[in-house]
Image (cartoon, rainbow, N blue to C red; front, side, top):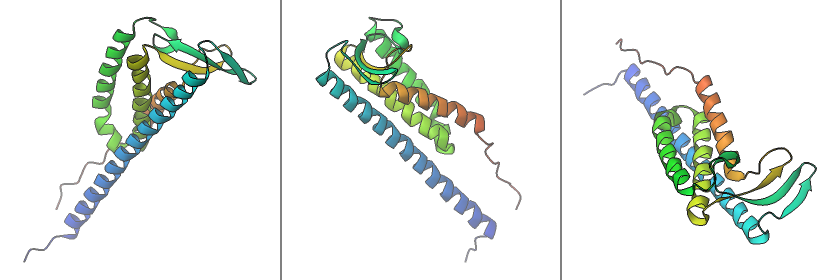
Amino acid sequence: MSTVSTREQLQRAIARRERRQAQSRWLWAALLAVTVLLLDQITKLIVRGSMDLRESTDILPGLSLTRVNNTGIAFGLFPGRATIVSVLTVLALCAIAAALAGLVSRNPMVAAGAGMLVGGSLGNLIDRLMHGAVTDFLDPVRWPAFNIADIGIVVGATLIVFGLLREEPHPVPDDEP
């Protein structure tokens, strides 16, 4: 009859808890990615269906809804290069996924940021591929128009940075009997 020491039982319990936490963080990242992607695509569908290009409506002092097609990247940089921007977006998403794969399971803030960043990037990529340009519509005074995907990208990147800065060192298991 084999007996399992209390230490072994504790290590197994810790490993099970860490696996559950990792699965939960991956699920959280996926849910945030899907949520950002759906909100982005639904709002853009509404804007494209109800507003003409460059049509604008004031909704709050200093904030308008203005339909704009952005053929470049953030702030209208590199206009008219949708194919190059799409390829670069796919490459960036792959690099980000590879870089964050291990961190997402260990850090809830990085998991949330990764989900939002991926959801926003996919939302804008879908626009580029399907429409040749990204639909922007939130138009504050003295700032370029943007959309829900852009919010997801910026908030997601910010969460990743803060999550990495706050990450605690991973404990090293004690090998003593």
